[in-house]
Length: 352
Image (tube, rainbow, N blue to C red; front, side):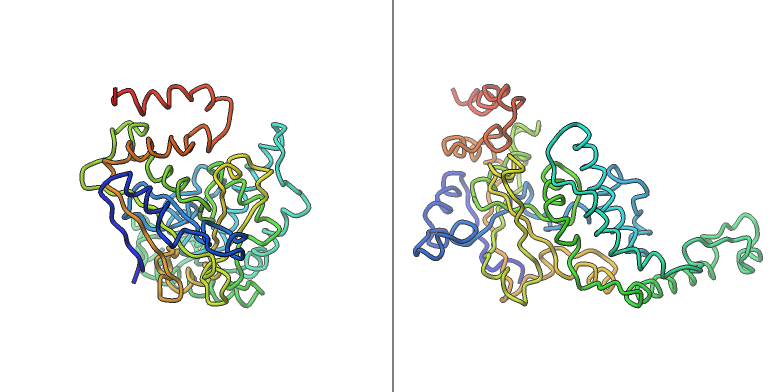
């Protein structure tokens, strides 16, 4: 099972009415009125309903433009610690740059070491490992293969690399690295949330307490604003939702992460929260790939989805406009205020 409840709609009005009127999203008691989310539900918009729920840091090449020495596809599979190091570096570089420009951030130079302290034992544990920095000049097999074969064509080299991958998983654990613990550590969660909301790839997934905010992000990149008209024929947009009750269970595969909204106007207006995988690193070492949230879908951890044809994206944005859900309301800045009229003009110019 991937989606426990999978609703399909044909028009934007019915899509909005679903979130306004369905009993799942109606608060019925004082206890639920003080919980996170609309009747304890959180929501995420997807411009393509077929996309998997994979954090940006785990997507192919996600860290290339954000950290020096980002792991390549091969390196990431071989060395989890390189990926962890790149994640911490990307956040640190962002925070230092923002601090240097005078922006208020949760940067604490004394706590930034926490992330590195997690991965340092693993860094020290693989001394002498010849599968990473293999020197073909010292390998009899490579010498016998001839100067034009190259180290990557050596059967022995490939064998050493494969054995090294298994060995590294063991040495990381032996050195005191607990793959079961969430990453980043709690001391870096505020910084990670801020970085995530400003485009730095992290292992957090963005969610909103509002289905209408999620609907905006589902529609925008399939709309006229994306320069492709209102969607493509056959494509669907989607809002994914799940119960926050399930996130507080010991069996939940993810953690709910909140960051102070007064530090981030975007997070405040978007009613944003995050999720983070509990055992992501352990999953990686076992399966040699990063997980998606769909990998954990079950009766105990239920994902739900509402779908709408992408050709309805512009109509959905018009419905949201009347609910005061716009680009400038969700991302308040003087630049977006300056384009508020242009936003409305794009939405309604063809409806006259």
